[in-house]
Length: 165
Image 1 (spheres, rainbow, N blue to C red):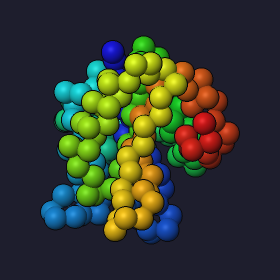
Image 2 (image 1 turned 180 degrees about the horizontal axis):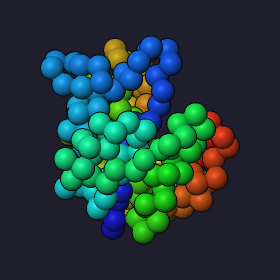
Image 3 (image 1 turned 90 degrees about the horizontal axis):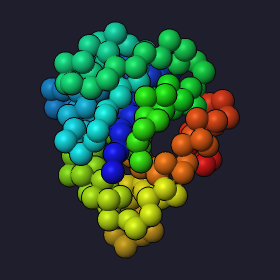
Image 4 (image 1 turned 60 degrees about the vertical axis):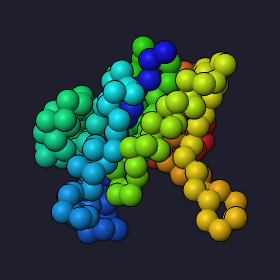
């Protein structure tokens, strides 16, 4: 079973005021931390979709496929479509954002293991969840979609993410 990963690193970060992926947490940029969290051995291909030249360089440095997004103003759906163009032969694709500095590699490895454990993966959607003090789990990204959702992901409405699939 082939699984890909798309690291989404193309946003303009207007509310942040500058490229937030260059912000440092414990001495590392958010983008470096995001890419270091990717368990590369779990994936057949990792694509990093970004508008930033430094992001393209870092993706190459880490052995990932850099995918340029020259039109980040088109929103999340455009970033997803650009990444999906490189995932046609996969059985599943994980989407990871780049601004979760506490995301752990072990969490992503567990998601991939759970995906492999499914009897039929085509219609599967796995989301990382977090539960605080017995509350309902908070479902967040990353998200892993089975191949049965690929057409819907490529056809997302402008500016929308996979939450509408």
